[in-house]
Structures are given as structure tokens and as C-alpha cells.
Length: 167
Image: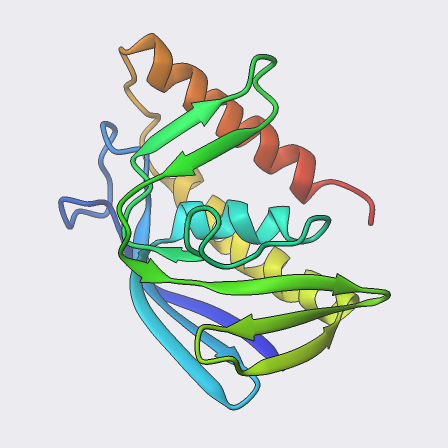
């Protein structure tokens, strides 16, 4: 069993709208088997990294955490179709490993759960759609720095490619 929920979405200043903040935060709750993980995370980064795990393995502690404290540094690739997100070392992580038509999720406490890729994909899409919906209700972002702008464009390009990919 894998479930991920988020409540109380907000920008870093605590407001429900902030055109200068690119990273959405919220109170995330994840159920992996019998284990429950909770963290006030940068859920925009969580959603993108969950979308990445639909086609790629994620090994804990090798990149940004799945529930990161922050994700303030977005590095785009050259053609603006992929990003790497960096933040601090705080957060909660887990591994997602593809095994045939399933994914194995391994938490930091070594709890292992196997979920069908169909069930996992549905849960990831539900979470990502909730995050995207919040962004769409907010004011357009005001980005003046060219590097930040490229990172933000690449973030959403990758998001849309991964969210709309036929699996």
C-alpha cells in the first residue's frame, strides 16, 4: 500500500499566493505499508520527483529527498526538458525500485512494500494534480533572474512531459 496526501498548501511566507515564490510547501503524509511518514515539505519538488519515479528508480540519499525541506535551487538541462533540484539535507527519503509491473518502496527504517505500477501511478498522478491545481489558482510568477526563469520553465516542461506520458 502506498498513499500520499498533502494538506495546508502554502508559500514559504505562509501566504496562499506569492508571485515571487516558486516552491510550494505543505503538510505531507505518506503511508508505505504500515509505516506513516509526515513532514512539512516542499511538495512541488516532491511531486516532480514522484513523477520521475514512474519511469526511473530513485535510491534514497542519492539526490533530493522525496519529502525535502527545501528545493530552492533548480538547475535546468540545456534544452529545458529536465531539472535537478537541490536544497538542504533535511527531509524524509525513500527508495522506489522498479520490479516488473510493480515498484518496491523502501523507507529509511528499511520497511519494504511492493505496489503495482498502476496503483502507484494513480497515487502519484493524484498528488501531482493537486499540486498543479494549486499553482494554477495563484498569480503568475514574477521571475526576473534568467537562470531562475530557465529553471522554472524546465521544471514545468519536465512535469508536463512526465505527467502526460503514456506508461
